[in-house]
Length: 113
Image (tube, rainbow, N blue to C red; front, side, top):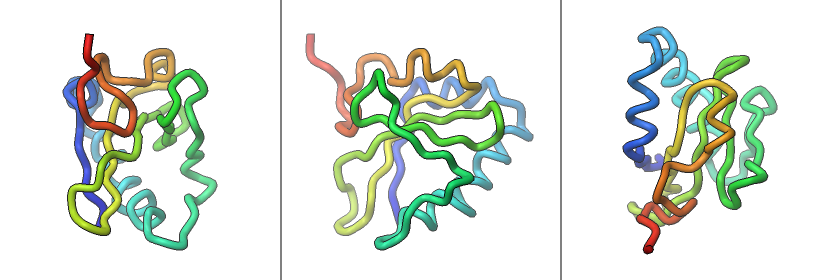
């Protein structure tokens, strides 16, 4: 089972979603994203997982037609389990600033300087 970390910006973005949108995102993550993280599996086409060009190491997940979440792979927390760092969530506009401010993709740590 993968582990997850939600950065503060993701948590703030999440609060701007409606309860129905939050439920839909959770359902997509539990029913599709998590199973597709299993070894030997590929992400299903419906998730439209793509690299974010302006942010190396960051990916986008489509959870509804205009719903996007950005994430990266983080450092392993539980041995053998994939660790996901959630950066942003909202509409397609989150791709304008896909990283949580002050965080490196895939590192789960703050930038220095």
